[in-house]
Amino acid sequence: MKFRGTVTIWLKEGIFDPQGAAVKGSLETMGFREVEKVRIGKSIVISLEAQGVEEAGKMLEEMAGKLLANPVTEAYRIDVEEEKAGADR
Image 1: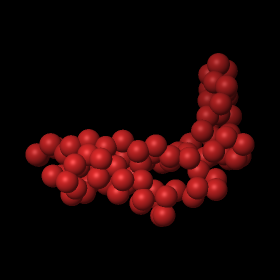
Image 2: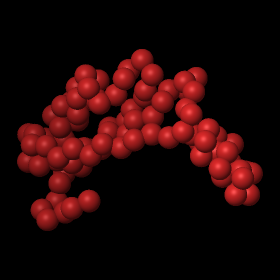
Image 3: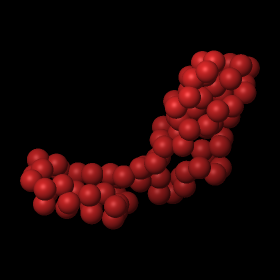
């Protein structure tokens, strides 16, 4: 079966996020003074073959832990769904 996994990665709390600080400053300059914090992250979308959603999730977890995210400074979340035929995102 084909699956689409999304690994969303962001800096852990306590790690300074210079991009987030710059965006927050720009938003404040534009009049959005209600913004309290901005954290910038990244999203990696991976299509893969697996026997089921659990196996796909385990594979993505291993990929994230070994390569995609730095476990010292970054946190991540994995979402997995069955890939629909003809779906393109």
